Length: 461
Image (tube, rainbow, N blue to C red; front, side, top):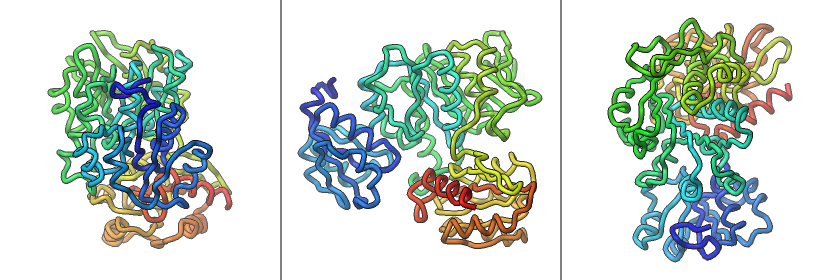
C-alpha cells in the first residue's frame, strides 16, 4: 500500500489525538500493522486514554501524552489528525510550514479505497439514517460496510473490502472539513438530513458551519446523486450548488416536478421519472416523526442505489434504531426508560419529547456550545417534571423553566442522583427520558460514555 506515493512501511506518521471514539485508535492500529513508524501524541493523560492504549499493547509505538512536541509535526512524513483537533492548531501550523501532509482516517481510507460510497451528514439524524441504509444494504450485500462518525473508523475494515463492496460513511462537519480540497472524496450518493444550529463554540457563524456541510457534495457530478431535505431552510441553496442529480425528501407531498420521497398518512412514497412506489410502512419499530423522516430519506438513498421498493419497505419496518438515540432499553415497575444521550442540541430534545407518550420526566442539561435554547419553549410544559444536570447550558434551560413555572429538581453534578430523583418521582405508566440537548464535556468523556453510564445506573435500580 502507498500513501502520497510512498510505501506505508517507510512512513513516519504522527497520530494527533488518540481519543476515545475509535478514529485515532484505528489509525494507529492500521499504520502499526502496516509496519509504519508510529508516534501517538495527545494532550490527555495516560489514565484518561487507558481504554484506547490497552488495545495498542504490543505494538512498537512511541507515545507523547499530556503534551505535544514540535518535532513530531515537523520531522515526519505524515500527520493524522483527530476530527476534534481544530484546523488552526499551532502544531498543525508547524506541519504546514514544513510541508508535512495533514490527513484524517477518512481521507487515508479514501486514498486507498475506490468502493462506491454513500455519505450522510446533517445536524441530527445522520447516525440513524446511515445505520438504516447499512441495515438494508446488508440484507442484499452481506459485506456492506458502515463507518465514520458512528465511532467505527473505515480503517478497521479497509483490509477486508472487496472491490465493489458499498461503504456507508456517516460524516460530521469536522470530518468533512478535513476533506476540503481532497478530490478523492466523491460519494456516489450524498445525503444531508437537516441543518440546525450546532457547534457554535467552534464556528464563528452558521455560514461557516454550513460551508463545511457542503463539502459532502462539492466533488460530485451528474453521474451522482445529492439528497436534500425539502423542508430545510438551506435546501434551495444546496440544490443550486450541487452538480449531482438532486433528489428531495419531505414530511408532506413534494411538488409534482420534484423527484424524491415524502410522507403521507405516515407512509413513505418515492417518485422518480414519473414512477411512484411505497417505500415506508406506517408501523415502524422506531419512535418519532423525526425518525420516520430519517428512514424516509434512507429509503430514498436505497432506491436510487438500486434496491427494489418492496424490499426497502420490508427492511425499514424491521429496523430497530441504534444505541443512544431515543433508545427504550429498560422498564422497571411499569416505568419506561429512554436513553437519548446523542441528543446534543435543543431541537433534539424537542423531537424526543414530542415522540413519547405522556406523562414524561425529562433529564436534561450539560455543557453549552454557544447555541440558542429557545426551541425548548415549545415543549417546556409537556414533561411532568424536569431533572437538571449541572453545566454551563443548564443556566439557560433554568431561566426557561422558571419563566414557565415548570416543576424541576437539581441541577445535579452526579448523574446517579439525577436518575434517583427521576425514579422516585415517576409512577407506573410514565416514561423517564434522558435527552441532555447539550455537549457532554465536564461530567462525561463524550455522549456515548454519558449514555452508557445512564443505562448502567438505571439497570442498578
